[in-house]
Structure formats: structure tokens, C-alpha cells
Length: 152
Image (cartoon, rainbow, N blue to C red; front, side, top):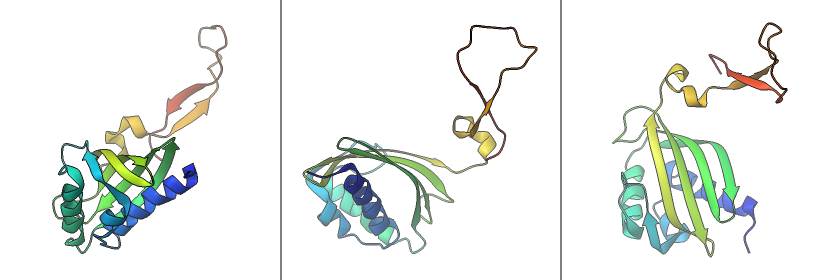
């Protein structure tokens, strides 16, 4: 049985091997032969993943920065930034969800979006805690309230 720490580390290492180390063979070591690609912007199947890894390997400036790793059961979510890809000018923010079975990645869902100023991404603004205003209409206490800050 694989622990959640091991699954998270495995997912991170696979992405580092593919993006930073340009290691196309990482697909052979880490993806199941029955791999299913759920991201419509990427080629499907094991051979599709190998061709995508080869495309990344042919981009000398390709790199990845992984910001967050979330593990739930047999699934791992990575929040990352890609850069230096031939088919995507500039930096790209990505969410990659992997499902593991028997220690191999068997499914992937993903989403990518060009990186932009934080003001264009209100959903990912940092939230700060503040106390309710003294002049605000009194309501039944529900705890703390939140408001977005303008900059991270």
C-alpha cells in the first residue's frame, strides 16, 4: 500500500522528470499502459503521453514550479507553473489531477491558463481575516468574515 506522502512525492517527481529533466522514459516508469487522458488539450492514452513528454523534451527551456500538492485517497492534485513550452508562449498556471492504481498513474485531468497579473484572477487572490465593522448592522454571530486583498 502506498501512503499519501509517497503518492504526492511520486506525482511531483514524474512532473519534474518530464519538464525539468526532459526524461521521456519517466512515462514508461510511472504511467499505466491503460492510461486515460481526460484533458482534451492533450493526446489520449499511454502513447499520447509519451509523445507529449517527447514534445516537452524538445523544448530546452521547459521547466515546472510546483506550488501545491494535495492528496486524497488514490488521487493527487498539483498546482504548478509551466514555462518554456514551444506551444505555449509565456508562463502557464496549471492544475493537474492524477489518479493512481498499483503505484502507476492511470488517469489525468488538467487545466491550464496563461499566467497574468493577480488582478485578473480574483478567484486566487489572497484572503485576509477582518472583524466585522462596528457600524455594520448587527447580525447573529457566525464567526469571522473574509475579504480579498489586492496583492499577494
